[in-house]
Length: 629
Image 1 (cartoon, rainbow, N blue to C red):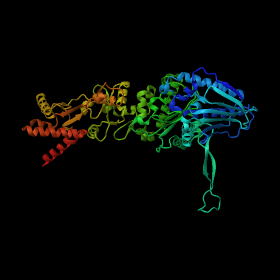
Image 2: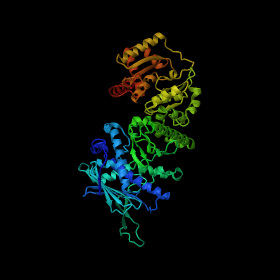
Image 3: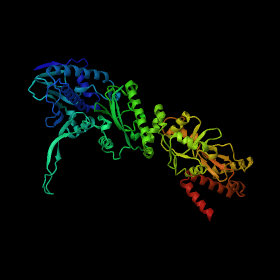
Image 4: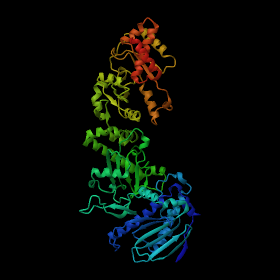
């Protein structure tokens, strides 16, 4: 037996390993199984090129728990090591890698935002073990080797009578890490990190029911047998060619990724590129709701089928973090902070490739089956609108497939919409005014008034729509958006002809004063006297487009003017000076009747806008009954 001392230049490196990234002690199992996988794949490669003449068989990795002996075993049937290789790879290379890694990050602590922690490798075992034994036998004729270390720089190495090719690592679990002797905990870790490793991983056995033999009675129990419990899928869908997969295969893989997700994905995008970087994966568009924060962090990042993280910010463009699925790339650096990651050239290329690929897929879906695309629009629009806002290249691509639905359920691309409404909705300054509603129920009367004039009203109700309209208005010439209740229609789309008021300037001023007196000093309404069509409402409440939009932008994050999100709602009370009822109010002889008429008209306008509630609604109902007695 040989004993020795590992050359340590970082003081107390084993306690550092023990404490490092305390919440991430669990990664030791991922690291050991990654090493076992590498050893298996290396042997497969040597056999394939004729450099190893061994019977390969069907190699697997096995994880075993010995709860009484407080041991955890990780066994592979891979390439194995000679004594010289153990000295080189365990005492020198593996340790220097762990040392270098810890030296770099020991002061960073848990908040470093290091996304992968790859690099700790074999020595991560000492985060959970008091002693580690390695029993290994090379695929060559070299004798077996036993290496042992008790978590100090001291190690021993001696011959072993091991006959089986490969490596067995035995972790003597420390008292503070006995959770890793629980079957449920190890199964959880294998499912989390190793669910799609390319080599089968055995963890215990399971009972399998066999078909009943011919002639068996109905009451006879079906025969069973114990079989290896292989916990991973070594050939997940993303590792296959798209041409080898059917739609059902993609849906089955989605259920494998998200077993608790009961809704089917809307569609998928298969990623596959090998230049200028390597990347494979499948992204799914799920059905999204309005709560954007709840949708994020569902994409899983892998490196060579090893799970790394489900926080892909910086790798996937932000607007696509609401999608689901898998991205696998060996070219994403893992031992780095997120700020470094976002500045990395390869990662930027990956991000722009994913953006382009998603844009191309959406475009082809739109062209191939527009009717189906329209049906899915409400479920995917938030992602597309967010992308149009945040990525200029995606904004350009989306020109051909982004849809603008009307309140009547028609869908137009932007160019189709322009063509459809340009004759009716171009104002006197040659600007195209696009009317929209955000709530069909509460804005019904305004929508109907616009439709009566032959105007199209868009349905724009996503939480970021104010930002999107701002972007469209600044990137396109001579267009503006106006919500149907932002002003009366003649003001929203101003034509050359202006209505002549039936009231003189003096009468308008007198009536304005009377209305303001009823409203009171604390009113949030700005009274406007406007000459409108006599069939239009006598009183109308509108919300100024600019103020309301800035407030919405502030509330939905970013944009807008500072502090506007907390401003009270501002309304205009538009009085139609050409309506017969308005003339009657002006000519009413008694103040009591005039006040009652103004209140009634005001409440009807507020009712139409959905602003009449509580005590004021009750008062309106009582007054209305009194008026019809």
